[in-house]
Image 1 (cartoon, one colour):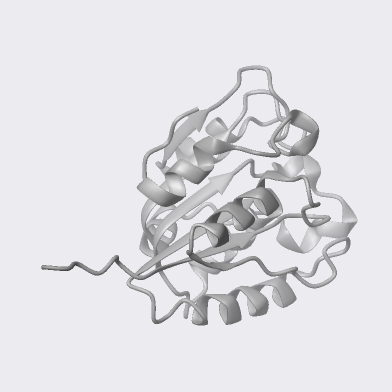
Image 2 (cartoon, helix red, strand yellow; image 1 turned 135 degrees about the horizontal axis):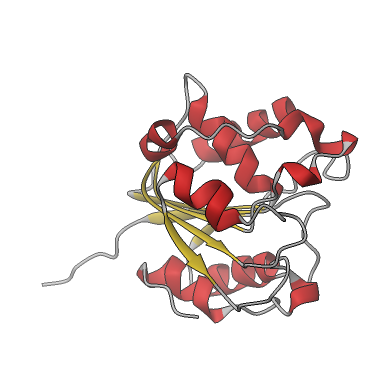
Length: 194
């Protein structure tokens, strides 16, 4: 008897300033696509001066493109995490099966260019309605979140949190996160290995 592989789709959501060709998100999108997965990796509008409402509209459109998938997996990085937190509290928010939140910025990053994203809604119940499984991945020394993401987001939202690479900074290519096999493993197998 032949069994058909479960249909799944991935949405990768970048943060402020987008993600370059050597960023782990770009690497991940390419790896998943090469493995035959359905991948959405949109360039969000005006990523150097983003507006929350425009990003929410784009997120809603992108999620609709995953609607026919049996498993929907979303990976958000940096300001993309705050985008998801706002999405989660919206009345018509769409839920997904698995959600990975990577390196969210804290209120100390609230500069005029990203002010519409702050303060981030910290509604654990709404977040849990937005995804069946949620995981936060962060460092303990991220200059974009001096409040420490594990404490500022992980605890109040009551979500599983992994602190990786003690002393590492923001999880991006400058911190050595181009290829990141651990996040690829999580996407493909729902297990996470650092």
